[in-house]
Amino acid sequence: MREVVSLAWPITVSMLSFTAMGVADTLFVSRLGTEPLAAVGMAVSTTFLILAFGMGLMGGVKVAVAQSTGADKHGVAKVLGWQGLWIAACVGGLLALLAPMGPTIFNLMGGEGDVKRMANLYFVIRVLGAPLTFGVLALKGWFDGTGDTKTPMKANLLANGLNIVLDPLFIFGWGPIPALGVGGAAAATVIAITVALIFVATRARRHLGGGVSRRPDRELLAEIWRLGSPMGVRQLLGVGAWVVLISVLARVGAIDLAAHVMVIRIVSVSFLPGYAISEAASVLVGQSVGAGNASGARQAMRHSMVLGTAIMAFFGVIFVVAPEPIIALFGAEADVAELGVTLMMIAAGFQIFDAVAMVGQGALNGAGDTRFTMVTSVLAAWFIQLPVTYVLAVPLGYGAVGAWFGLMVEIAALAAISLWRLNGDVWLERAAPVAADEELEAIVAHSSGEVPALADGANEAPAA
Image (tube, rainbow, N blue to C red; front, side, top):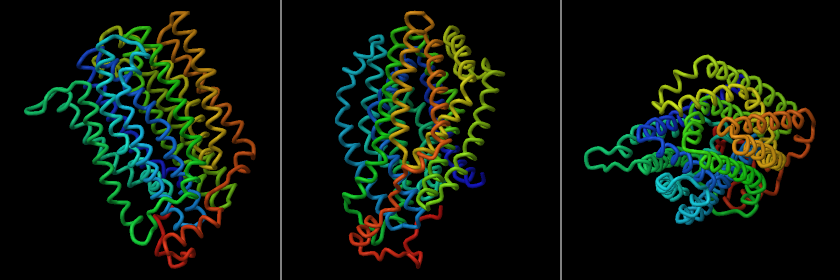
């Protein structure tokens, strides 16, 4: 439990700072009215759809580095860091070329004219910053995999704090800075991401510099792809399902969409710490698999599950006890606020399910069982959540309330499936850690001129 907490608390702080940034974005944009708030909801979901595969793919860096670190093969781990940066640059550059597709995407999603126009402005700015986003994620994955979660935390605190400061300047304007509205929120985020990249790259330089090979390596790139591509597909189709949900709510009306966006920001206070614990579970399980310690992997999973469910259950109680004061912070219109209170009650009902699902899938990913998490997540999102959401929200007329009941059913199903998988042995038997491949160590030694044995500790990455 001590190890879980040690890894999880910096990720939790980092995620909470991200949440604070998101809440600040929503608070500032909500002052512009219901339509800008709805536009941000459409734009953020669409942006994550475009970036989703690459974001999931970067998870392969974390798992590969964690497994190599667990096997004490720090030379492999270092070269994997550079391979992650190569993937980040290539994938980010390709996705930045999709910025002109914004109008077409938002026409397909529906919504009112002004909402689509503002959403497109946000989308273009964020997608052009894709290479920067993936660069941060690649280096974050490397640090996390070695067991250093504090450095990414510091980068996020710096960036998210800067974003909160820049938000009102760019959204409302100040002095020579014009009021950019929704576009200002996107510009503030991209500037903050740039600062985060500079910070984390500076910190990584002392570990990944020197005689470490920086050239692309086919074997190591393939290993990251093997581990990360299922996570990328899972994230892409998961966000795709989320965008379809947003599209359904956009057609129901701006009130339902605005309430949904507002409550998602609130509830993220609970599920982002849960996500952080799942990331810690992924790292610890990955390092245990790399060391050939199956019992250690199970122990890490179980302690992470206990911690995650306790924290998210606590937040569920808060959502039930004090929804109105929390909603009031957003200054939303009366009908939006009333619907938001109802959605918070539903969110309180699935907190424990969400903790079990997130931590369970994080542990499975750390073991390398990424294809299973991909298949189950996609099936749950597209064949459970969306059908239930559509039926309840549109034909039966429950709108956002029906959509959130669909989310509850999906999350409960994922929790049950994850527990079933973790109770067996297959998730550990199928793990194929990069650290177990002696040929990769030889490749690294040849390409960098290093001796594979690191007995002197000179090439060690931060201790796990």
